[in-house]
Amino acid sequence: MEATSIESTESGVTTGLRPWKGQSNWRHQHHLKNVHGILNIFGWGFLLPIGAIVARNFSKFPLKCDDWYQLHTLCQTSGYIVGAVGWGTGIWLGNSSRQYTLKAHRILGIIVFTLATLQMLAMWLQAKKEDECGKWWEICYNVLGYVVIVLSIANIFEGIGNIRSHAAEYWRWVYMAMLIVLALIAVALEIYRWIKSKNQQMPFDDNDIDASQQI
Image (tube, rainbow, N blue to C red):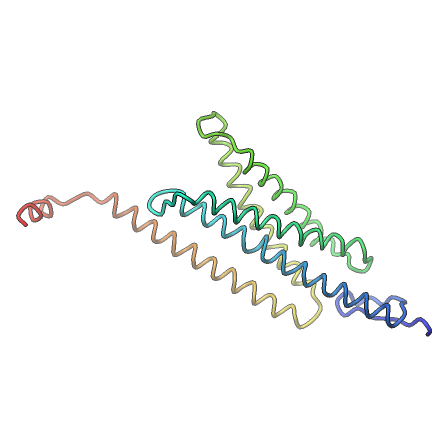
């Protein structure tokens, strides 16, 4: 059977391959691209923000939860592992296909993975609060976490924008819906915490005290 040209629907580049080999290779890469995107969305783009929401709202009064740090660690560790697998899949795709070279997406992915790795090391090697550097460690850890989340979201949309098919619009709306849900949860928790804090700071009225004594 003679060699023929197979055109990739996502890269738009034609390569000389045998029909059966080209179709099999394209399907394999297409499957890996889907796996790469789903893992990155769920790991970097969903679990890490949940971990940040937990740390922000359940570590202090009035929503303080004794197990907040365990839940935060679980979300961050799971998000890092899932995201790292997705990142590794993307690196493999970029190295195995000369046509699949997305420089901006690749560079952002490397930055996200590097910063997320530093954050994981900081989480497991955290300084004690009584140490002098404990306060600075907490500030750097929080800032680094928010930077990773922002860059992850930006890179996810960058990756979706590189999809040259009708599936791009579908995944864009799916991830936007996920972000909207997370944002609504975060805003609701912030409002609830603000209301509870205001109620705790509100002084008692003398009339209310007299009324309670009469009862």
